[in-house]
Image 1 (cartoon, rainbow, N blue to C red):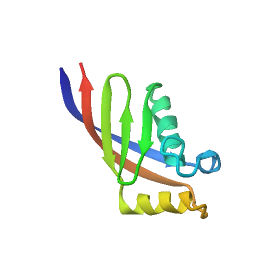
Image 2 (cartoon, rainbow, N blue to C red):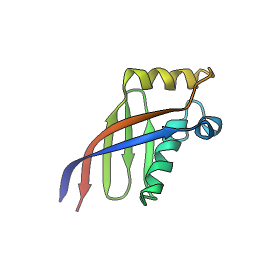
Image 3 (cartoon, rainbow, N blue to C red):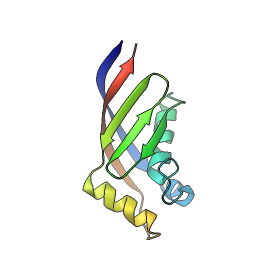
Length: 101
């Protein structure tokens, strides 16, 4: 049985995430790394994130969530992927998805 639910996650993308981020890699970009750091602090160790053109997906063995990327975040990701200078930032993401019970 699955239950539809929402999650709100505030993410702080730091200079460390930027320095260690991999351009054009949806699993290792700074935003994905920051999301992993945030969820680990909450005790959710097995989450995987994919940051794609218009959405961010979170999945693990029991849940699947998706958040829509804002235009501002999309521009930031594009600048990073193009090798341009980007600054740390904070963003609140609204994830919608399902949890298996």
